[in-house]
Image (tube, rainbow, N blue to C red; front, side, top):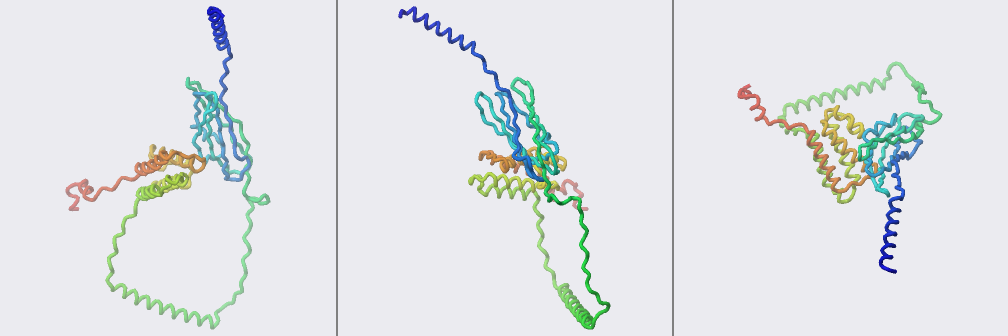
Length: 339
């Protein structure tokens, strides 16, 4: 084939390929989706329900979960898991987050429609809303028992009674009185001998350690157990969470041990915890909850950071040290010693 004919054929094929590419239909980007599921829909009072949200999002779209824990209606939120992401084909990604809730009133209820705000890279906002999930909450009482049924007390047992005292009883009373008199006499003599003896000076009782000293000692103990070397992340984070909850209970005199992480986050500042330490506590306990209940396994560096955060919480909230006597006298002035 002549060179000119080959060039013409190559040019024709190239133009056809370019036209095919330019006229090929552009595949429309799939919209974001939200799927909400519950691991159980029939429970008894106080049982935990794991609610899982699965979002499939286009590239550049970010969800906002900050207000989601206030959308569960009459269900109490016990645990908020950390979001988990994984890539999907076509540049999309899947975001999965778990919540643990519980109902404390028997009867019919529901997991209400949950709304997740979205925002893309261009600042365009949108929302995704799920369908409600009905939940049946059963009472722990037997079906045939009425909770308002209060039964009367059983009748008392009648015992035989005889008026007066027998001779044997009178003799027992007399012997008992003599025994009591002898015991009192011996006790009085022992007390007089003990009072006349020189008393040793008691050793000074050391002041009890403050809650911050106890908390730091416990964190030192956790650090030395070797749990991270053994890969036991659950026990490591369980001990840290328990230590911080006990410290808050003793330091600020409120029952932090009996509160969920969400309840602590809402009420710590009310009991005198500063705003920044309160945020550190909420973040640390949420991380520990994710390890204990949601199967989250942080890297060793992250686990060591959580331990360092526990030390920082104790340092930021510890009471200031008392000044030494010399400094206190100097602050009162030159005439303080003579008073």
